[in-house]
Length: 179
Image (cartoon, rainbow, N blue to C red; front, side):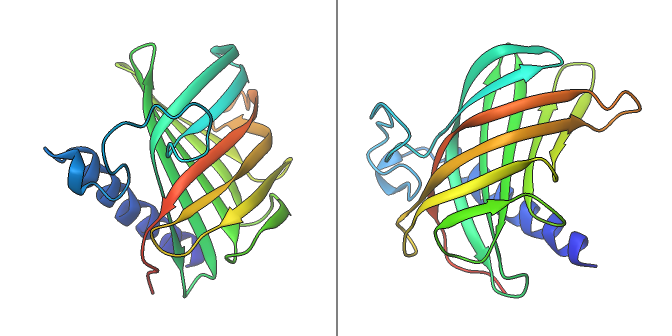
């Protein structure tokens, strides 16, 4: 039952991100007011800058944008979502961690990361739920930033169970809590 709540939470967060990213005017965009987003590092740019190695990624550095994060009161968990395009593939990166505080958390159970890759021919899911850590360095108020880093191994969810290592930093704007 808890996993179903997370799926609905992910879909809700994805809907908000898609709505915001399709806005005609950047001046009213709460994820990226002013529309610039070229501030360099992960700081205020609502990005996840990741290095992926394994499967179709060969020490590939990717920058995913539109970072949005929210806290689920009923699940006592925070979810951050980033998206982008790499080599004509759409990538979606989810980070799920317990609570709403700073510090390091090992992946396990319902907490960890997921990378979805949609190509013209298939959809691939890489799950990081055992061998990794999410470190939250800043947990801002609603409208502020949730920032940190991730490091660990993702497993392609196929019979081959291909490993992909991931490491990098993230910065996302916090949206209002959901129940």
